Image (cartoon, rainbow, N blue to C red; front, side, top):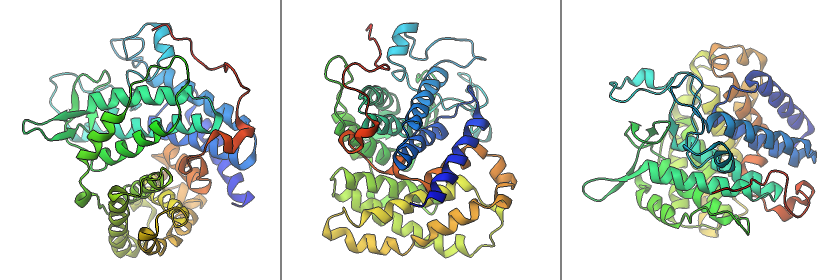
Length: 393
């Protein structure tokens, strides 16, 4: 990784901090931002970036773990007392951070308006679980993993449900208090993302003494049953990138199984279609969404790392995917240009575009599942850490 890429990522994250301030929080964006700070700590060996990641986690929990200021309720969305809520900030889930309050009960749905309304998305929660676990892995502070597991247990309980025929499904969007679905359809990759993320969480040790987070084994089995290997393919850039990110995590976790192969096959099918039409269109910025394309770029960065860790039977499939890795550079080159960033499509989503461009430039904090022993220069001193919560429950 060149110093120029690292410096550019630092500049982007400085811009992100200026764009969002203290209270303007959005869960997906902040999840990538946390892992970007971790990646910059790895790239520069500067522990100050770890402190930025910790501080952002605290802000997210105290904003998105609590009811909206314009809502009729206040306090932690878990309903816990102030000290108990602070000790378990994720146990009630986390709001998306949309600009408008959620749809009231019994109000008719409006598909267009729903995109601007608050609530909880499973695929945002899973990104936050990943960010918390990455922080635990890089710092050795395993309380972040405990919070991720508490969030995971809550999310599975709220989003997964059974149909009358006994088959299992997931809601796409839930209310802020997780009491009712706002969008009942199931996200195409939500079960896959849950399966991979919960395997990752269980792979990280828990704090030895007082974390009481439930086992995620049942949730992992449930997600596995919901994955449809024959319907994972998509021609959406962000969706393809997500498949590749999940595949890389599975490979790192040693899960060279049918789910990994199905994810890679689906990503290859999507790339074949994406390259066949999207890349032939005129490169008009107004028709392009940076964060979706940069999600693909991050996934292609994962492909560059896959060949050395997958089993021999999958290497030919990875080699086919590697034909598309030059696309990562093309996407980055386009979106780093100031004229591209002056376009309305960039400005309308400035914060999320900024952090995902930084992730593509320095992807290690997001993509690589480190162990604390591998990054000892970032670890806190042994013993009780300054951010270990006091548990009153």
